[in-house]
Image 1 (cartoon, rainbow, N blue to C red):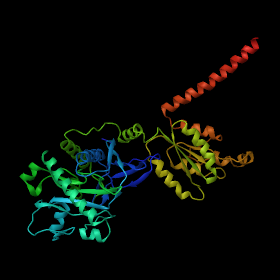
Image 2 (image 1 turned 90 degrees about the vertical axis):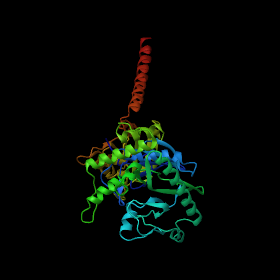
Image 3 (image 1 turned 120 degrees about the vertical axis):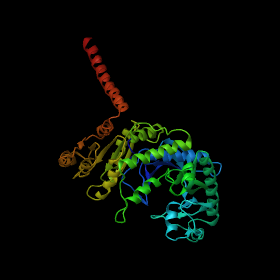
Image 4 (image 1 turned 30 degrees about the vertical axis):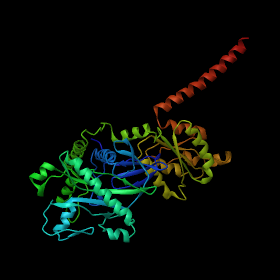
Length: 464
C-alpha cells in the first residue's frame, strides 16, 4: 500500500507544517487540514511513513467531531478527502488538555521513578501499572518545541489563557472523555487517556485538531484488560513507542521502522477505525497523492494545472501580467514571483520547494533578459518544463542579449520563446492536460478553417 508522507501544491498557500499534519489556506476563514502518513513519537518524526494512517486519523476525527457537537462546537466543516478536512479558522490555545483514567504510559514511567505529581495533580503511593484512577484526572501540557507539563495555576500565571477559559476547557474535556468512554465501552474498547485541543472563533471556545484517534488517545480492549491488566496490549501508537524503546541505542531511538512494524501499525489503525465506527474505511486503491489531487480538484480547491511566472525584476510585472491573462483564459492557475538569479538568488530554493514535490502538472515561464541565469537555474533544478521568455525592450536589446536565453548549460533543458503570447500557450501545452489539448486542437482547426475560407473566396474571385 502506498503512503502519503507529504503533499505540496503551488496552488495552495501552506500555512503550517506540523509533525504529521499540513495546513493550507482554503479561503477567508477556512483551512484545509491534511493528515499525512508521517508518524511521530517522543517529539520526533520518524523517517518511515505508515500507509493509510493519515486517512484513518482524519476520517476518525471527523466521525467523532460529528458525534460530539452536542457537548462542544468544533472547527470541522466537511471531509474533502479521506485524509483532508475543511475546517473553520480558529485562534488556537497553545495547550493540550490530557485526560487520564489509568496510570500508564509516560505517567507510569514517571511514577516508577518516584514522581507523585502530574501537572499539579497529586498521586498517592502504592499504585500499580495500568491501575485505574478513582476518577479521570486533567494533566495539561504546553504546546511548545518540547511539550511540558503545566499546572492550572501556572497556565494562568504564564498567560496561556484566562482562568475562566481554562476551567471551561477542563469541564468540556471531562464531558468529552465521559461520552467517548461510554461509546467505546459499548464496542469493547477502553478509552485509557486522550488529549483535546481548543481554539477560539469569534470568542467562542471550539474543539480543534483531532479527537479520540490512535495518535491522540490510548485504547485497550476491555476483555484483554480484565484478563491481564498489567500487560494489556494496546491498539494505538504505543505499539510503535514500545518498539522504539526496545531498540533504543546509545540514548537514541531508531529513526526508521522495519516493514513488519509498519504493516502491523497500519493494520491496527484500520482495524481500530472499523471497530469504532462500525464500518471499514473507504480507502481507494489509487495512489494517495493522485487521489488527493483528484478530490481537491473535484472540490474546487485546485485547477487542472499551474503555470508559475518567475520574473527577474519588478519592472517585468506588466509584461508577465499579459501572459497571465492569456493563461487564465484556459482556466489554469497562474502564480507570479520576482526572483533575480543574481541579486536575490537565495529565493530560488523557495520556488523549488513549492514546485519540486508538487503533484499536479506545473510549468514555468522565466522572464529575464540580460545575463539570463534565472531560466537556467530553474531548469537545472526542477523536473518541470521551463520556458525562457525574455522581456526585450527593442531590437537592439534582442540582438545583444538573446544568446543568454538560447545557450543553456548542459543538462539544462530550458526552452526559449520570444513572443509572450506564444510563451503563454506553450506553458499551457506543456502541462499535457487532455482537456486543454482538445481546446488547442479546436483552436488550430479554427485557424485552418479561416485559411480555407480565404482560399475559397479567392478562388471564387478568380473564377469570375
